[in-house]
Length: 448
Ligand SMILES: NC(=O)c1ccc[n+]([C@@H]2O[C@H](COP(=O)([O-])OP(=O)(O)OC[C@H]3O[C@@H](n4cnc5c(N)ncnc54)[C@H](OP(=O)(O)O)[C@@H]3O)[C@@H](O)[C@H]2O)c1
Image 1 (tube, rainbow, N blue to C red):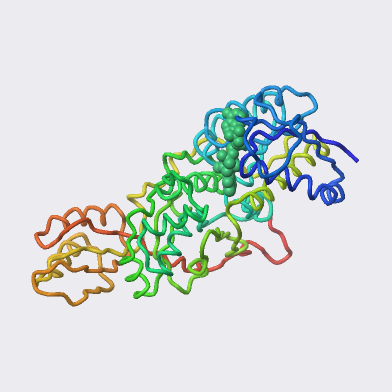
Image 2: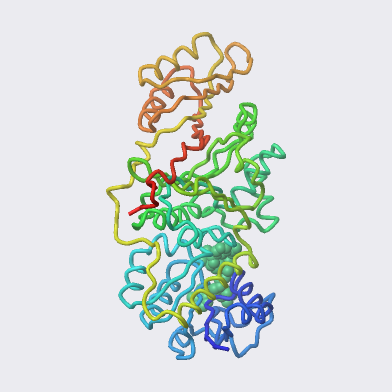
């Protein structure tokens, strides 16, 4: 039995889950891998904090540097979170030639260039399965299981907090504020929920997935991000009336450039993602060979995330034992900013809710602005109101570039009958593209 030394940096939600399951399933891991993992230390900030998982006091330290320096430690597991100390720790470990396992999406999305550069320079290795969709092994799927595919589209529910809030609003008809309070009460949202509800956490994951699937580093600043704060129960009600659910989706599409975006989306209620409720994550990958493949599971939590982190620890252990050279794997190499499509050039359909004064000719005024911009209306809902009162007006808009839609909206809000802020949400049906996998296979089986 081979022994490999590891250090865990961070003993919060994920760190405790990792330690607990490394111990609990130690025999299974030994049987499957032929490796015994020995935890030589755990770095924390506060040595006195009460922990849910029991750990020998001697393992805890406030000095993470001593763990990185420890010659017995081959694998450093970074579970601090944040971009400051975690960045220093990871860079120090990589420079020492240690393998690094991390769940830190913010760090990879915002400092990926530096981290991957140091990893390559020191011929070290970094593993980050838990950084996207918690326990769902989407990174390994892209890097290994789907290696032969060009990724035409990757889209999905990447933030459990937002999905919990939107599911609750849809199910119970509650306001955003009440659904957020419930998420905080049930432990599904942080006291400061901005990272989640403003779409930033999902944006970090989109940056990582876009980088992996397209082979160049997607700068986080190029991911278009909109959150869910402005979604109202009214929008959810109208969306349902029209046959849709509203979900916060991360979308990466490769078609005349790479689109990387996070925003609320109306998806048909018949779409498989519309049925993904609560804190679950789900990702659909469309490859040119495999077609559509879907990955579904718990996107966060101590146990699910530990499952992904321990998969990385296992892979790192096997790599250290059985390969001496860097194993080339699908991964980001260099920059590709020129290939990134601006959100202004992204074409989609739209749901537009306006607050209008109920008087004859309102619709004609809006329609003429849209017609001048060559934007078509596919349907209209105008609930009956009373002359002179403000009522909602819902328009479903045909495919249009965001630039054109945005400019038309600037004109529309200036019309004298429009009140308040308009609500614009993209509509996606993700129709299955014609499948042409295998077209290169000529008789005789020559695919060269
Ligand atoms: N929570 C999830 O479900 C989840 C899912 C997927 C990915 N992730 C990622 O996993 C990482 C960890 O998340 P978490 O929820 O486990 O965080 P957490 O509960 O806040 O735990 C962070 C741990 O790191 C320690 N720590 C932080 N900064 C430190 C420093 N400078 N020196 C020493 N110790 C330090 C803390 O020590 P003290 O305990 O002493 O304060 C704590 O034990 C993050 O990158 C997060 O994005 C989390």
